Length: 346
Ligand code: Q9C
Ligand code: ZN
Image (cartoon, rainbow, N blue to C red; front, top):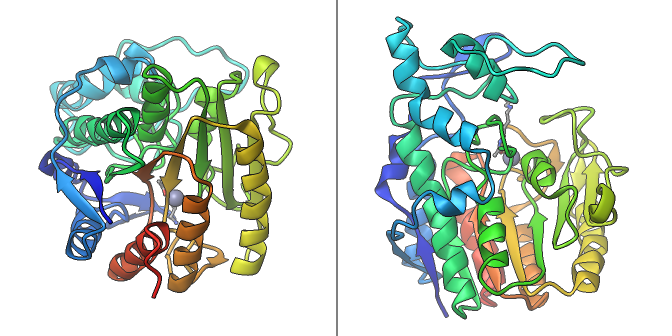
């Protein structure tokens, strides 16, 4: 068994020189090297047949994101250079609490306006990579809308921290949200999103928080201790019509598969009760026990169980790649997840 996979070489063009961690410039965690560690094992095992997505244009992106963010991402690097700045674009200012920020006219201020956090740079090739990554999500959603049982978007840069109007956390456009909205506009009345990345999908939550047609369910590290810090608590259940359509499962340091699987079991109850037409999964592999960002204890073998459980939900499914930074072990972890999902656990 195989599924269509989508990846575009333009996604390699995003290559900032560093990120800022602990007050130091360190090599970025989210690198283009991750791509081959995912692409090759999935091709070799026959789980995915990869193709370059066709260009669906800006419309499916603008169905989710503020046009101002999209325009900013396109021009930010050039504006930065035009202002005489030498390096990549980083946010160094942030709006004060309780102010309704007005968009500044100078690039230094604009970056702060559009940034949710400051670790992530906009470099020369960021926009073409981000655009291509979003096209992968649209193409995978389109395959499922056309009747495929499953499809994989090898998105990179990832997306689930991007809100309607802000980038951050290595994410610039929200690929999973764009896929979900595309499914809504192409035959699905109800779309569920399951986010299993180690970090809370704060961007995806933000985008669908007041809606009852898209259910968002996320399992993640306790936001009082880990990124994205300000969202992901279990009392965030949705707003207005969206009340009851947002479910968070924050978990503390040392969470093992037994505890994590209990949360997934509960989450699956919400997914089944919602009776979605289609499912989008934000697939992060950074819950892994040796991931540099993880405080969980998930093993390579556990990813097969997770994949199998998700497949047994029975929904037509768009798999969207998110995080995963134990680069050496990405091949075996992604293979394990797909082995479980494709019913090929040996
Ligand atoms: N100690 C995704 O997994 N904080 N984004 C890094 C490193 C940012 C993660 C701190 C984490 C963003 C898609
Ligand atoms: Zn993550």
